[in-house]
Length: 219
Image (cartoon, rainbow, N blue to C red; front, side, top):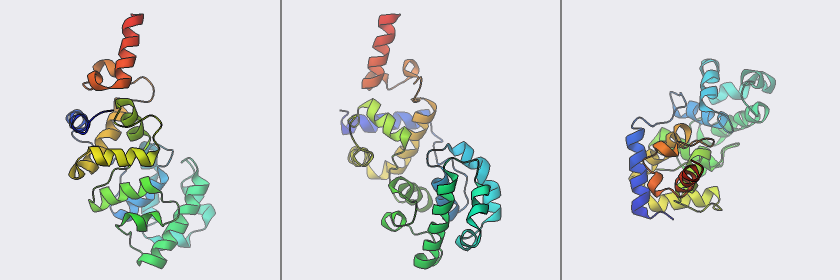
């Protein structure tokens, strides 16, 4: 398991590799971000960004989503995976914002998680990106990178990964670390064919060392 010091070093190295790491979902306000993150579940940010310009031009407020027929909203996001369920949850979420928050997106994670279709990861992204409150959202990339590097254990749940990262990374760096790890996982330490041979962290990465040893033995 990587120590706190080594974890911080790894995150710093990712920052040097991806100095521009930030949320890639295009949005102009917390409400658009919330909708975009909900759409991005089990789907790429690139695909969401192809759908949201027309969506956000058509629907500006929670009231707009509540007023539209479910079938019409489903058609508007049809190219996105799980679109039926997502359309239903977005309508429910919009109604909750109107009923409980005066139509405004709350900043508190607990309040966000109470909204329909909003899990911990989505709440953490909105808290961090929209309101600049330190948070680490564990998506598939963050989980993969954390486990490959040995920051946490292979058997850890998503919640345990989040808690371990919070312990091993300085709080003021949580939000930056989250984006750096996503970029590192998305563009370098990919699920298939991770670029271990060109990785500045290979010397400290349990998965990288194993893979490079296999390359040497078969080379």
